Length: 120
Image 1: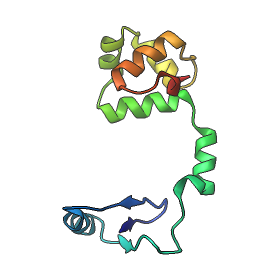
Image 2: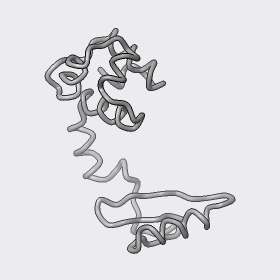
Image 3: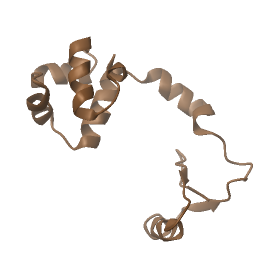
């Protein structure tokens, strides 16, 4: 079962115990949500969409850093304390004005528990 909202489309796959409860919650929050069955021909793999390809090409290490930091709920100050990287340097990295070196990438990856190459 898939839930799709207005553009850009967000695809959510639900299965298992509790899937219907989650779907009902989504419907209550997002009044325009539509539900489509898995075999619906209108749906495409998001990674094959032109939008995704365009966004993937435009993605930078700085954008990735900002997304990881925001998702973790950290300020630049807090991330700086965890990594030992100055706030000014983190700001430069996030704004693509300063490259993220390998040693900084490894420190960031340790905090975010991801592959350090995501920041290079």
